[in-house]
Length: 375
Image (cartoon, rainbow, N blue to C red; front, side, top):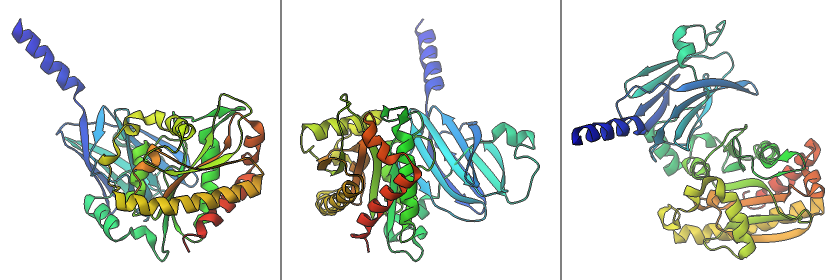
């Protein structure tokens, strides 16, 4: 009987054992990922269209990701524009942004997958049984050496521009955020954030944590900025309330202790989608007291300028600049703020951010406020 129980325990542990992605790299048209456990892992694959790019997505169920794996590889060459790797709810997803006319082939070996990219035209991306069988949707990762170089000396994405700014559209994918008046927060946040990113690109290197409707874990959002040695991080959101009369705009900076009970409630609402990260003690993060105090001063100043610009533009109620323990800001090594544009369930607020022109104007005043501090 004991032998049977022991066998069952071993069988269950083998079935439920999670594989760990320990490295993702990109070099000369090849994306390579290596798992710690030397087993053949066949990803679920799909392709989606985003602008001129096709996004190849490789999904690995029942998997984990090592902390050394960079969240973002910004490698703009003839094959790809970038690669994201995210982990959430027991699944690792690698997103590869393919340039137009690039074809791919995915090969899986024991403990390793490799995506080989070519620039040749093909009748179909799925023109071979091997490709269609293993094809996937987005990203991959740079090797650890490249990521380390970016952290130490500034990312190669900087080019001739001095500052790198991360624009983070809140929520995404299965996480719709607040809902109101027939709209989802994740959609409005993405639209405003995309216009903000385009506005800022005139003067800065800009990275978006997501540029379409997919979910990025809260810790990964900060890690994207940290891996690129970013100078500033801004997260775009819209608020929600049980009262339809709640209205106005507010901007937050990271504070270890919530400034008041209301700030704590808002932080709890935004953190709940990824509670495992939201409950992580602050002492576990890289940000130490020296950086914390320095970043907080800059964050407060930019938050005030952003709020002034939005209030002057929209005429909405000024709800203030507040400090709160937001998970998405907590892990950032740079100054960072979170903007609550208005209330989703108050149409008077929401209407200020629905049209492309209104979104463009909101993005412009936010961009101008950031320029005051990053010249």
